[in-house]
Length: 84
Image 1: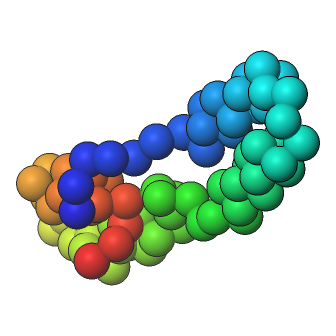
Image 2 (image 1 turned 180 degrees about the horizontal axis):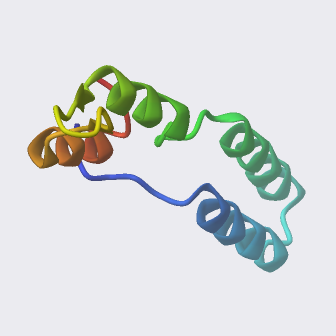
């Protein structure tokens, strides 16, 4: 996975700012279409998948039976956004 996670709201803000600057009806409509497509895109970081992978990769400590995940595994899971 590459490190190109972006904020959907930041992209929408850029498009909205461009819409305000454009006077062409065609450009305006095209930007609105793009904005709606961005809003419908799935997020790049799936928190539920991260939690699920952390749970699957957890082990139990012998002393207190509390689950834990090795740091290297946890870092890899978080960086991947939960995607294997």
